[in-house]
Length: 178
Image (cartoon, rainbow, N blue to C red; front, side, top):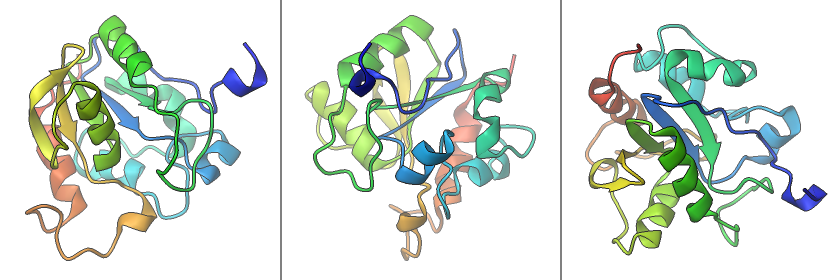
């Protein structure tokens, strides 16, 4: 594997997870720190605990331990960090292979852009937020608003007052930790 093919962040996956959270690509701060959702203002870890997707507060440095809570982490772009979503080399077929191999109950895209790339690959229209009526490689699909600090301050999030409301809705749909 060449340097350009080496993942910026490793996947944290295991068979039979309750959900795999999939972003577009690691942000520059996450790549520099070597952990998922580690950028300033990113609320991913806060939302996991506040929505009760995980029973304890976690931080970016805990990302390798998420499978113990029945969740996994990956991105659509594994070979480069990003500061925006334009011009990224999305690898949706590789994501589909990972989901098919690990069989999570849900794939939770952590942005509309990530959900859109998956839908487009399947020949489907751009999804809105929330549970979708289609599956991805056998997993049910939920599209979350981005937890990025750059996605704050909107008046509403597709019918919800806060981003956390969408995360709480996903939490209600997930199977319990086994």
